[in-house]
Image 1 (cartoon, rainbow, N blue to C red):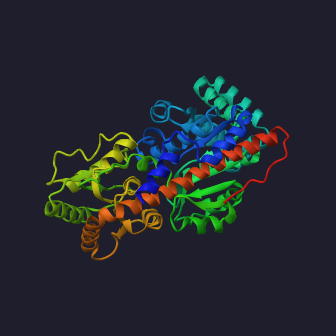
Image 2: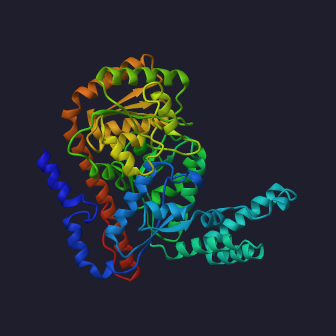
Image 3: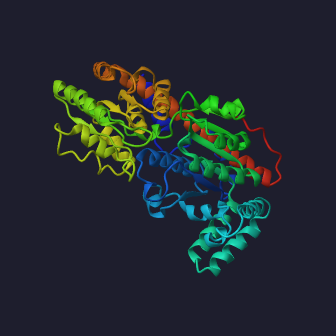
Length: 482
């Protein structure tokens, strides 16, 4: 098993080679096409504003997406929608920043100033919004002119430039890529509608759209479902990170089975590449406070008792593995509460400011206990068994999905069930005992997912080549979807 893994790593996982030997030959045969500057707009599942680059799981997926696109299409322009050009450059130097502000102004149906809107009948406000939407679909050039002149006349030159830049990006784009996200669920209506706006715009402009590393559900919001059913079936293909709900939801929305594939999480590759030869010796802890992963005081007390009791019994360290350090989601504070009385010097991992730092921290662990999805991904991809903690339906779906991808090296404990502390303690003991035997099977599972996700980027490249051929009047080849 070890020899097979290493051969595969040498062949295709150094982060600098193309997807596989066949793609290397294909790129040689299409050298002329690869020199054509192609334009890709990338949308992410990250938050907005100060929240945008605070989740290392989201950042890791964006890093992998940009790196793969850049390696496959070195001459392409990769424009990422963002609120922070500085952070984008820090994490993804090969990408170009495309301001979210321009996109927000472009899709906003607010036409009248607030003071005017308060004075006119509500039905007339709706008419003006409908009119702007109609112009946006039918006459985008006219809308750009109207908006730019309006903002210039209002002394809002920054907004005028943002709209101009976004409109120009739409005009030149050859493909829209929605990279790793789990935003299509009941608690994220705003994000879902914004993504659907972008996808619909691309489709109306006859621009291909691909969605990679996605997660769907739980989803029962009628507004999202109705809109998604009219748009998502027209996406070229959708790959799923996992989760048992995702595929049935897409089927119910009318997305053909031939366009759906489960590949695993994009971030698996980043963690797998950083794995160490020797296993760690600590117990990793990743916890979260937040609307979708709320842990109350009693649960914190029970977790503290189980984790500290295990660490003392085995004479090992408790190692902080925060994923999100944002205004409203502070994994570090949750971890500090659980470590209180055991390691009062710990900052909860607050200083781990990049995906790679968190991944290297995970490498120090023999077993990881976490309620944060990407802490589990970072561990499992390195061959480290995980005991996941699930409470909300949203997180339960994501974490149980990892069991499907990685097998018995991943166990999920439901915090809503009676007697969960005892089950958690047994699960940690079991994972600790079997960690050495589970290491290679987990790494093999990670490798399979990496090959699948890399192949999906090969499909993106072939899709772009096909689009270019159609623009040049070359008869289209049959696009193979697996």
